View 1 (cartoon, one colour):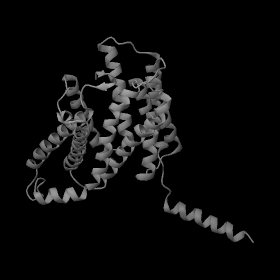
View 2 (spheres, helix red, strand yellow):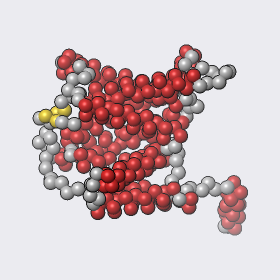
View 3 (tube, rainbow, N blue to C red):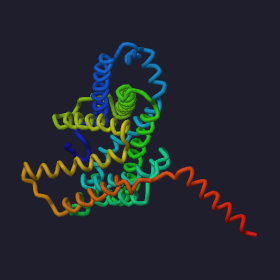
View 4 (spheres, rainbow, N blue to C red):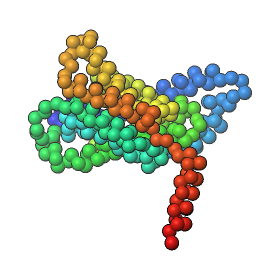
Length: 315
């Protein structure tokens, strides 16, 4: 995306708004297709009562929608302050933040081996993305160290919280994923449209032109972001956020290998070392011996009896 004088030629909020609109259209199309495949006696998906009840049950989806709106705008802001390789490096910290949030919000338990595997994933991705870049100032002439801590904290925390809360909201209700996507993307479109209105009020009505400054590149970006968002929703509904992170990492690896095989791109030593660590991390995290095993009731009673016996021996 081209930048002129430290600014984008298009409105980042408009990109996010159009992305949400594209996802809403996809959700509606899939709902229509799914409703036509319903059997006799099933409650119609597109019935007014169904939509109202589902909207009430899934109102929590407004929370991740708002967080995603903030995060998607922040992605563009980060490009103004940091070079792309730095942004990628900082985004790697989301792995551990997501795990911590899953532990406290979803009550997910991780073994020591799995925590080590997540640390290896972070190291492997970082090795792959290591580049030699000259030190310098930001686009606004400010030292990077003066703003790095604040932006890194927001950039890492907000999307991680959005992903975990989205998984929690989608799994907490037995609602069609396409209905949930309709509400999630609908909330997202509303929040981004409010952002466009706010920008037009404070910076002038010319900023209300949603398509101003867009090109084929931004249209491709919108389609790509929409596809990624739709795919992510299936991970949140039927899998989990950690698996989504591993899957996206593996997809990046295969993209690099395909580029080397078909386009003649050179595979660097960083790439080879990085993917080796990532695959070790994946094997370690999903290994049966790494999974947390719940104590059986009998074992708990045995431990309690042993403890009571020891206490009775103490005078």
